[in-house]
Length: 463
Image (cartoon, rainbow, N blue to C red):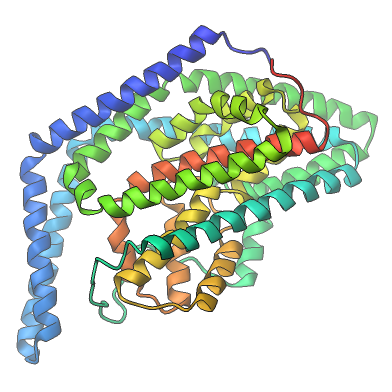
């Protein structure tokens, strides 16, 4: 792969930063002007809903309860109508981010398939695949446990939910987020694809990875004939990376649209209300970055500083779009330029998007225990460790896309008898939190790829 001209790379990064701040500024402006009526009406309706919910809980009169229930239904319907109208107004901005993410998703499945097949086939045999796969999973498990444990420790130190003092909701009240099924059978069914075409259509990265490993091993096993497949897949991967370059030119517009829509909806109020939680979570992510960078330093030395510098563009992109997946193609390209072996990059990075989402891991323990604290539920350390282990298993294979973590958290809350409706506490600020954890996922996977390259003696000097 030929490195892009530095001036072009610098321009794209600069444009992303400019559009990030421009989107924030325009979002605040729209929140106070164009959407002022909708936001004011929504706040008023939410206050009415809270009052009605309080009255229903205190009411001893059946007829009054039925009447209040009907009022609540009418208010919810009116609220949904206003939300739909607000979203309609912001469509010109949100569509920019949506189109960009759709284009990225268009690329991800064929890119993972072609690069991973080439990477596995070039490793030569099943022993090499097993050796490198073992080292990769060793790092992934260690990083995942560290992220989950660090989140658990810091949320117990900060205790951001204590100040919320929320009354537990009625039995059966839902957050609206579907709970993830925690059964071993469904997890295994999710890992092994019934149809690779269906897996690619749905961008099921873990299933694509499984099929690609089988395909790559078989390609290497047939000898000379396999070389034709490898050459074709390698050429196809380069074509897809070229398409990635075209798509990345739209990144600044996507960032502008995404930030404008988020801030226009949420405004400054949501930041003020949850500022303590947001601040403590981002501080925790910073601690996790330091731990991961230090662990990387122990293996690759001072080059870890250069690595953090070169991945700033995909990290910023993941932060701005709230999607690790959006940064996947660019991360792959940059790691190859940094000096990581292309076959290692092709093997480790796709696996990382299923097994090594460090930012999402930390968020899961942090958010789950925050909700428990908000309801005044005291969880013993043994229970918290059990929750950590459950999250360790159920989180594997979650997509690197916005709000995927919430589905896993919902299932975990149900398992430990924490009100699932508590997720509603986070839905408003989840886009802001998703930005930080998506950026952390990119950093974590970049470090993992560099470390495995070093362990295999395949980390070359910087280009």
